[in-house]
Image (cartoon, rainbow, N blue to C red):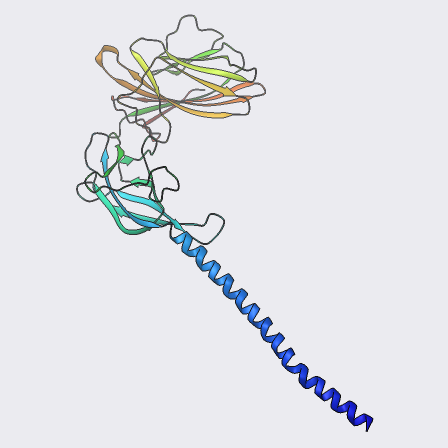
Length: 320
């Protein structure tokens, strides 16, 4: 009898506890489902917030040369930045390309994103130098104070520099080691790089390159100056080898060279003697070494008055 009573009691306990067990299991499942749903909703809100930063993008541009002439069939290569949910920058960059029409105009429309950045503009016979030109446009206001507002009646103008026709260019090369402060060497457009001296008393060349102490003990000042008052110099960075027709030409250019530093400089020479213009490009590769300053010198001289001083030269003379 007692055994039957105990059996009945255990059955009642099991039956009474089953709903509680089932109820607890359902609550755990519900909590898990709510957590997953909450995370999904949170992710959707983040995506919506990021995408809300994107805006409509349209752009109107025009490409012309340094003389104001429109350039047709120029290839425009740009990058469009838009929002993304992917770390670390939460941005997506897509390359967009187009060509200019017969009037040098181009445009983009029906785009969405944050900004436009023009990487390059290509046309055979021309070079593109982004320095001094506005090539980045912010539509979101995240990068610049004011959002860029496109105006179809006032397109953004980009300049492609037209190369001069190929001319007759003579190249001369020399490698020098300058060991003493105050040492100088001459550059002659006709004879090339002349032997260096401690101090040049009677200059016969067109340019003089000298080394003087810098502001600190580990630096030197490299000075390039013209010998004649009618000769002028100007520096131009980048890959363009066209001597500027106009600009801030002067008689002396100075660079500071620090220890453990290498510099490459292109100096353009313009001669105005006898009302005849002559152009040359002096390229200096300078580096401080334990024994002094190593200097590689390349001289490119136009033989026909052209400003085109490309490295693809007609003549090569190596000075030993």
